[in-house]
Image (cartoon, rainbow, N blue to C red; front, side):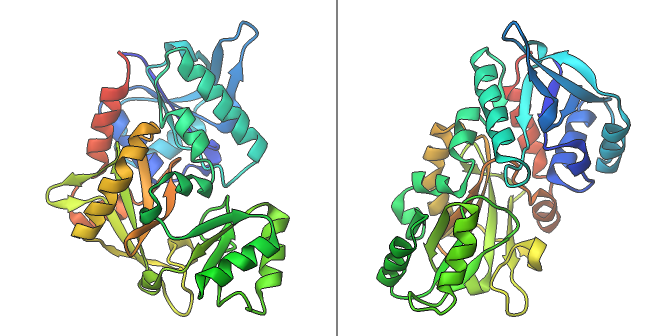
Length: 327
């Protein structure tokens, strides 16, 4: 059985309780040899082949804490990627150098062309590297959205919305630099645009009224809801205090989610596009009946979803990984 590689930003970013560490534990428990490879550990060799420096995990690890401890203490060993049965990408392009992430994506595209299975597919990851991926979803499945670096265009778009909107960077995580703007005459708008445009392009979205009640992180496998034992792999995230953001990292509180008919209909509408783009595992952030963000690199939320539903939602994901690997 060929070894697997799990690609992350760096071993120092791996921590117990993360979905990636939990996934590695399930893989180890099933007897599959897997190596942890950091962003800087891939290499393209002189003959055009690909290699990596991996920290190998033994089979039979029982906790994610053991995974982290073993990965951090293991020595890096050179390996040939042509011998690998599966590459699982769990990067976070919102952290680290944009140029480095782009180079790694280019390497993964070339690697996949040699026959190495990579999930999610690198071409789909390239499309989903920023929040701009939202534009690939059906128009009725997302809020009115403009991506621009022009203040006049942004202000005109907001005026056309006729009400509140959300302004945020196209690349970013954890709810950082996300602002609610009252309207096109909001006195803070110039300053917000200044902050956004110093970073790059800004994404402006029509405000979804249901945002005051939070959002739902929905985890999809091959464009379909992950369902097990009567529950779905989804988590409601409820904002606290006066902050409208529901991200857990800014104080949002996780709570159980329900598979409403509207949510199922939304997944039915966006699922085909995710499958066409080769996006094996995706986390959608849903407010009301629209998707406000698609997380295609390393979506989390499995631990809370599994706790609330009383089941292990990573189990069907690992089953699907074994099905996707080459022997």
